[in-house]
Image (cartoon, rainbow, N blue to C red; front, top):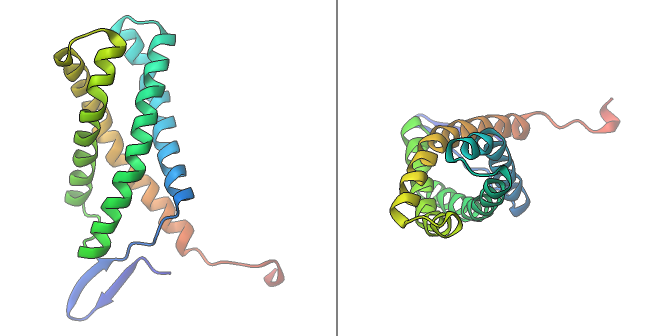
Length: 162
């Protein structure tokens, strides 16, 4: 299935190939696993906390983020399908910012509780994490979409064709 359609009267429009719940779970799991491996050790070092305590907090945040990722991306894909916009750089930036802002509201109270800090301190910490994860969110999703498009559009060969 081609992911782009052309019409003489309209600009190229991206067609959203539907994602199964299984694929959404894989996407969220890959996103969180790579993010945790990239950022958790530095977070423990910067905050002067044990890797165990920070690891547990990271798993909690990651679990919330994975669930939010699946819900948010399902909704975003519905908006894309309804309004037919392509994933331009502007749309990707809006996607990443919207995702992270929603996550802030869910994570800040949990971090404040876990680290025994004020909501303001947890918010400042979360802003730091957001500044790390915002570019990561954009880059990860661009890479994922690129790989996904290649997998979806590659010719299917059956064993009988060999």
